[in-house]
Every structure is written in structure tokens, then in C-alpha cells.
Image 1 (tube, rainbow, N blue to C red):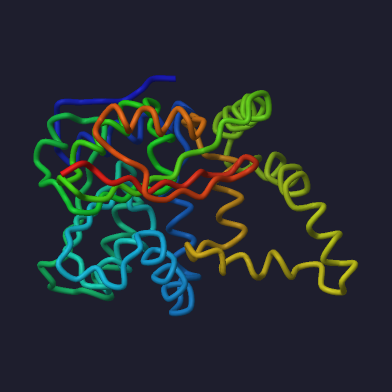
Image 2 (cartoon, helix red, strand yellow):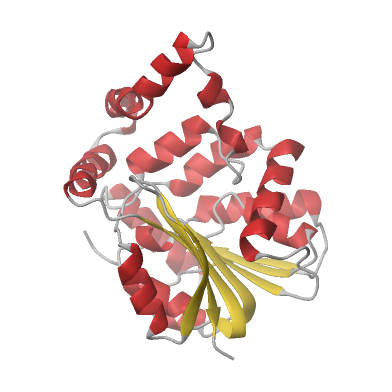
Length: 289
């Protein structure tokens, strides 16, 4: 797999490189999945995501803050930050994700100069130098999908203002289990799209089978599946499944490694929520003043 990084900050260059990685089977089309998800976005999901974001940042409002969303995906969290009063800058490497975020801005913040959306790359030094430091830098489940996770974390952290907050989520290192999923993810992205169901269905049964059985014994086999969007990020179970199975590039980290890495850069952990399995560990760090 080829890791990315460029001195160019043009939309055309980012889009061309992204397309070349997808064609080679070296990258999952995260934005394509998010585009499908937007059809399910409603006020309840927005409200749930809004409540979760404020809780994790230990804030009642984002008025007076600047919010940098690195890897904006569907644009949901950028929208939430905007609605809560922040000045928002969103960017993503995936052109479909950029289109999703722009679509939300067009719908909820048309003509506003308090929310800007760009096509960019966290691994591009030239692009990152064009951005202003922010009081809140947010990157949920993104930096481990760049192909150069630690460099991506470092580049993102550099844009946190003194005394600012850095909210990241990174896949937990589960040793051999994580290594087995690397094989699945590589296979999924090398498989023609029309045949990927043959990988998704076994993964669905592996990840959700016991939950379906448990809920069935209680009389509602799809309860947890249907309630999944209450997880605080507004995600649907199906789109999260596709994102997990296809999510490549893919790197993992232990909480201790992340905290040590951030401490070396002048950050102190304010809050964390650790996943005991294959999911994301979530961290909010505060940069020294």
C-alpha cells in the first residue's frame, strides 16, 4: 500500500490521488458510504450527536470557539459545531465526503461565512500550512485511516491553539484480532464491488449474530440494530458495519501509546472512553497554554 502526502494543496490533485488509491484497492471509499448515510440523517440523529459532542468536550456551548473538523465525513459533526455557535472549518481527503459536508452546509448554513469546507489532506504539509490553529480540533475515527497514523496525529495536533482541545478517536490495538481484520479489509477493497456482499454478510453474522440471538430471546431480534443510531454519533448500524469492514488503510494504537505520544507534544488528557474490543478509544486532550 502506498501512503500519501503531497506538497500540492489543490482540489484536483487530492481528487486524482484519492481516485488512484481506490482504483488500486488501496483505499476504501468512505465518502461513498457517507453519501448513502445522509439519506438517513434526521433531527433526532443531529440532536443525539450534538448532545454527545458537548458532553465529551465538557462544554454547554461552542459559542466563541473555532472548530477544525479533520476528516469531516458526512459533515454531521461540523454541522453540530456550527449549530452550537462555533466558527467551523471542515476538510476531507475523500471527494465524496467533501460533497456530503458541502451539502449539509448548503442545507443548514447557506451563505454563512462561519462555516467553510475544503478538499484537503492532513498529510499534506502545504495544505496544513494554509489552515489557522483552532481552539477545538476534532478528528473522530479518521487519522488511523490515512496510511500514516502517527504523522497524521502530529500534524493535526499542531493546529490546536494553546489551551485548546484535541478530540480524537483511534482504533484500539487488539493484537492478533486486529491483524486478522487487516486481512479482511485488504480483501474487501481488492474485491470487485458487485461481489463484496460475500464478505459483508459473514462479517455481519460475526459481529452481530450473538446480539440478534440475544434480542430474539427477548422478543425483538432487531432491537439493538434499530437502536444503533442512539450511539451518540448519529450513525446507522449498516453504514457503520460497511465502514468497519471496508475501512482501509487501517492502523491501531494502545491508549498508553497515544497518551505518551501526546504528552511529548505538550498535551494532557482531560477525558477518555476506552473500548474493550475492536472499536475506537476516544480521547480529549488539552494543549498546554
